[in-house]
Image (cartoon, rainbow, N blue to C red; front, side):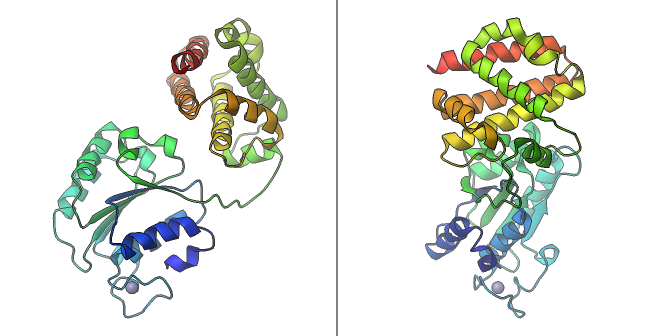
Length: 311
Ligand SMILES: [Zn+2]
């Protein structure tokens, strides 16, 4: 029930309650969950609250047709998750067929998309039609850990609800924090330092970084697997810079706060988002076995261009 989350997610709860109270529900909510542990239960309680004819927020009412049922048994609720890498276009088409019919037990229909970052071009196109021609009684709840993972065409058509970061663990040790996010791989302080040094050098010297890329990167991360970890560390580093840029807290690189603050000061938010996009592209290229030297050269040049273009 919604009120179970009021302490941890007060703003999100208020947004949802106001929507019903003022009768102004958005047709699509993109919920940025930031690894919130109870994200799926929370989103389900939002769906229940919307669907329940009495909008119960407290104890489950055993006579209520919506609150008393499990998620699978609520007829006007559909939960979509990828079975594999991507959410398939056929899943979206099935949804469209299903949602062409009127609600059965509520006055609304709701679909939840788990991991909205797994919508690829074709399934996203199918859902965009839904989002562009909203039907009054259909509400979409899209869940993703970080907004920048979702296609911009989708983000722009949704009301965004960012959940509060409820930390399960607190540590000022960057290596420990990273090990929590990049699971199954041992990360050591030297590698983290190397990536931070690379970023500092690149931010300061731009394209000239190419001259030093062996020392700064390739000698330390010689194999494909090393390189992929390095890109992950770099991604989390820039993510923390964005956190600071948005007046939030450093989540991982706490013992590099001065460096992070300086880079945040030198870049605007769009530049930082562009840079994250470039790092993700570089990582993908390495995954597709492109030449690692070339990928790194390309990344360095593009990162520099981001700065020139925006200034
Ligand atoms: Zn109810």
